[in-house]
Length: 492
Image (tube, rainbow, N blue to C red; front, side):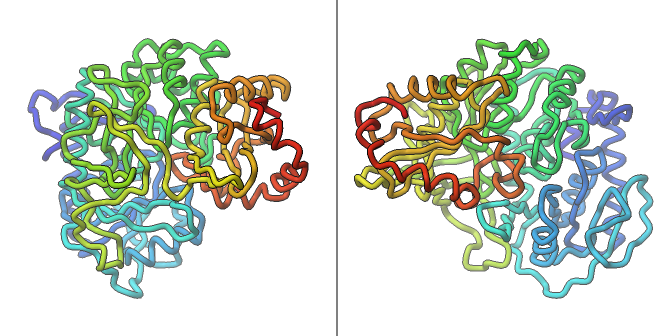
């Protein structure tokens, strides 16, 4: 058992959920019990549709031990997306926390407390590359999620690289992201288990989430303070929340030694501000097709302006600005045989590499071409705005327009429109004229609280956001004299 590599760990605490704790010995025994039960069911594909619980981790590991294909079901998926996931992957057995299964198939008895089981009828046998142990579904930018097929080996390669790179002692990791998120699954569960760490699990309600949306920030902050973790994994939105909370007087626990942030570009200024406030933040980069993390900053090897040093399980090169990765890759996309066993992954990310550190400049498909024919990456401008610490979210637009606009979600309710204008003007002074923000809209509610606007890791789904706010955006460009002021360097 790879997660029980040292006899000295037998009585160490592996998993914690409220008042329940499992030692490493109990973890091994419980995984074996679930492995044997799963094998007796004579199935190949198992879906886990549960919150962050001990049972989620046990069944995930049991699927590995039984060499079954595990398919995590994100709680934030719509009923249509969940139905698509179940159908596309040909799920035979579904594990839930309630008897209200999202399927109409037969319930069967479960010997495990708090776990409900449904046996599903497979309509069409899926096409899955040989060696697939997990299918992680990306929320992507379209209605139907895409299944990324991964081997156990590729996942553990990443987990080992992370454990070696971060090199924390006496790990106590608090899982804030859903376990169905591959980043939390590998970096938040597998890596701590490799070093005899303790993993703290909390429900959506305890974490202040509703689906993928953070609805009770104070609940999240209270949980972090209560659990005193040594490590966390954040998406940029949650980093902005913690920085804002610190600015308003929240004291991060002194136990924190490593906070990984990924899922989107983070400005060096925001990372520096986080460090100054007592948040040991280290930015990384990854994607599901590479079994999550590709590069990471660490206390031993850091460039705060970058997404970190490339981890040893991957190799990369750059073609016309685009990052291309080889090495530790996925096995292919579910039901797409033409994609099986790739030799490389073309990421679509525009990057630069300096002294071994990877910098993410933007997405190839997100490039804005303004009405003067100038190209710019919106992520660049967004990162500069976020670095001020005044915003919880930003989204820059301006395709075929004379100047950029932005949707801005203030980090605190007391920030006035006049203050927003001053901050935008300050940022504009450090940008070339074609990248300056000439107009903006203050958001009444964060994008992540509007269903369908962001992915599980907090990445904005740009086409949906721009369509949603189209009626507010278009009038901003009707007053053409603004072009002159934009060119002069003053924000409007």
